[in-house]
Image 1: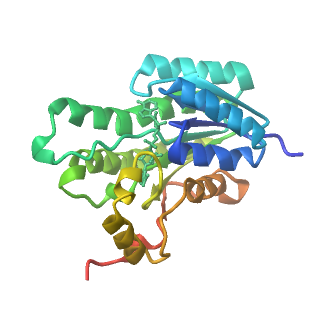
Image 2: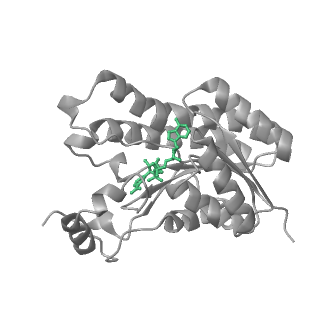
Length: 253
Ligand SMILES: NC(=O)c1ccc[n+]([C@@H]2O[C@H](COP(=O)([O-])OP(=O)(O)OC[C@H]3O[C@@H](n4cnc5c(N)ncnc54)[C@H](O)[C@@H]3O)[C@@H](O)[C@H]2O)c1
């Protein structure tokens, strides 16, 4: 049997992060669920061991706090001896009209979605480089990396920044065999978005707009992450893979 990959998923306690972790568990990975919601992360780790993970553990970590990120990376190194894959998934979307948005919420959106991924990427890459075995860093961005609306100005500012941070890291880390790529999910059913899709008109509009005719699942994103982390993807670096059922190609009329 192949040596299991050691994978850190930030924000892996629920939603897309948990779906990603489940897909890696099916490939017998060692998993670290790094989430500020530690109780939920523990439940997720139990679920992942049952789903086939070689091992899975929860670590309490607020990714906006560099000290907590460094401690999480240290604990992962201590437990598994190395890190093969980092998935920068943790994110928030306050969904508040820009003219009503407080400076504090603006800053938090930037801190979690953008600066948190910087902390995790730098801390993990500093461990991957001396190990000399390369690595994979996957950034979960969004269609809001290039599109926005009045309620997603802070979110789009953070996600577009994250897309370029990913490209920038790919230029710095490629020479070490570490690839950096983004997955831009479309409409995915998770606790973050469920409230939108419970409104019947929104659900109907979504079915009509998305060429595949359905909302995405966290596993749709997880399967793409497993591919980007695989040997088959070893020369893919600095791209954004849109996993959105074809939504990206649609014009308004
Ligand atoms: N759901 C969608 O339709 C969709 C679409 C595009 C992009 N995304 C992106 O996918 C990612 C996951 O979204 P989701 O829908 O699963 O969201 P979610 O709210 O269901 O889950 C987010 C997870 O991140 C954790 N988290 C939040 N802030 C954190 C912090 N500071 N430190 C550590 N953990 C933190 C939460 O505790 C939670 O477990 C986000 O980056 C989001 O922007 C989601």
